[in-house]
Image 1 (spheres, rainbow, N blue to C red):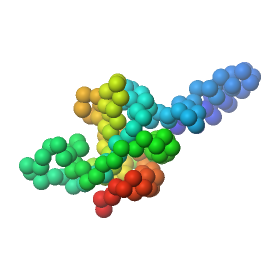
Image 2: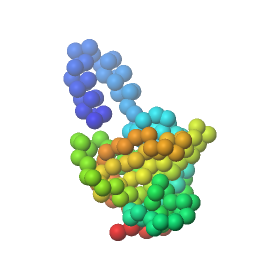
Image 3: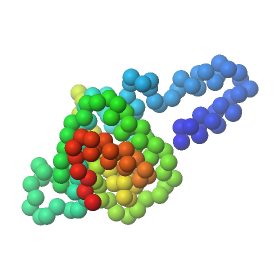
Length: 176
């Protein structure tokens, strides 16, 4: 989506000269190689995720838990199969970029299920944000600092290969 906007603006502003095009180039939502890649989600969740040095990756059971399951073992209604903290900036960047590519590529396609197998939880001084991700139905539930669901974002299934690789490298097993 951002690339399409940049192409449109570049064509529209070309008669104004190089200065306008140079200014456009500085408006990218992605920062340099050292900085975070902001997720394409609403504020304040976007800045909380971008400012977190550590992301907790969670492998989730997509089925509903049995009645009476200890709520402390659940991540927004789904059993946690495993969790690991990741502080590697490159891994966080790859996860962010993959998720953004999936979000940008979705043209409104969605399924009626929600069977999340991936979760991300981040916390900073600004608050905490959780993402419950279902690449099967192409949805991401975003939970804000108060723990309530604040947004549903559509994605595509392609980011799952990046996620699965990073999750496996971190020692997590993804549910079938």
